[in-house]
Amino acid sequence: MKILPSEITPYTNYLNRRKFIKSSIATSLVLGTSTGLQANHASNQNIYDNQLDENDSLNSFEEITTYNNFYEFGMGKTDPAENSGDFKPKPWSISLEGLINNPQVLDLEKLLQKVTIEDRVYRLRCVEAWSMVIPWQGFPLAEIIKMADPLSSAKFIQFVTVFRPEEMPGQKRRSLPWPYVEGLRIDEAMHPLTILSTGLYGHDLLNQSGAPLRLVVPWKYGFKSIKSISSIRFVDKQPDATWPMLAPSEYGFYSNVNNLVDHPRWSQGTERRIGEFKRRKTMMYNGYEEDVSHLYKGMDLKKYY
Amino acid sequence: MISSQLFKKIKPLIFFVIFLPSLIWCYQFINGSLGVNPIEKLMDNMGEMALRLIVLTLFISSLSEFKKFRFLIEVRRMIGLFAFFYVSCHFLIYIVLDHFFNMTFIIKDIIKRPFITFGFISFIFLTPLAITSPKIMLKKLGFKAWKKIHYLIYPASILSSVHFYMLVRANKIEPAIYIFLILVLLLYRLYYKIILPQLAR
Image (cartoon, rainbow over all chains, first blue to last red; front, side):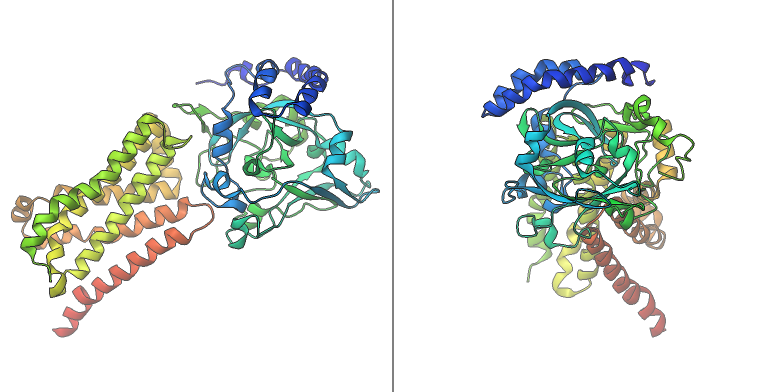
């Protein structure tokens, strides 16, 4: 199978996405008033379909919420769905720290009144060579960065997942060093494709999906998209990230989806789209090459994997 | 104490119990109740079952040296063959379901990724054990040659447990238990079968 040019998001589509953002004001009204999941499904289907790239179809809500890597709730794929019942995503606050003019603790409810929730249908590619297509709701990370007003010395951002071993049984074991941390370069963080998600399929994020607030960076392997974020730190040096700390030869800080640079354990050339039988070819930057390749111009992607 | 005679009678039951999981998983695979990534799940289940049975045969080999547990030897070949059955399922799923006969990709995968290399070599080592398992083969080959072939279980079992260890991303405790069990059983046998007889000479 060749990578069809049509599979890579054309720039016009990309511009169209901006248009959908406007229409999503209506969506957010629907979100605000509806109670069940079903009601939102129907009302948003057109928006999802419009944003879907050719050759993609949405994964089901069940697929998206029963097959997760979220080690805070256990290491099996179904553990997060089964063990996250005690987690309390409300009330929630996020602290903005580090090299910024406005360090503060944001109450999530208040924050959500200041931002516009948008629909974003993205492919998600896991480093384990499986993928999904997910209709997220969220807002650009850039919005929060503006509120923080970073100093010019802030070059990177580190994200931290909440540490609540009483509610997150996986954190009682030392499978990973807790809390989970991840990072982005500030230009990656400001990129319009980078969002903080609060929902999917018109439904508040379930605990296993990273409730109440998670990062989504669609051109990077899934583990970069850190879940249940409690703090956002602005720093001047490349920050620690959990997987690269644990196994630096396997996971890099950048971890951009790259079909040409293999992980020692998984070929990154192909992937299994959940729900499909035959593997697909993996696309450079997960199909978002036109949108993001300029961020890495001149970088040796074999070195900065 | 259980006599070999009595034990032979329940052999069909043991056969059924070991065979049953594969039937259940295939049924679940077809009817869609094996989760949202059923190919991965089926492959993992088959592989881990194979590893369990390999450990079980090693355990039986050591235990049956004792008079009390001699009867266990009655089922060793059957369990060994089932281990090979599950390994074969595991390998076939990898080729047919996971990569759908994409042989260039598979060959590259086997060469390039150490954990797949180890698993593949383990499969190659287990094949002659399965082929030479009938009693006729034992007669044809003679006990000494047959025994030598069957020493392949030592590297095969180590390789397959390391294969599992390397595959797992975090929580390496479970695969580490398999490696530990296999090493203990192999060292025990090495001591009693090879080192002690040498010393006794």
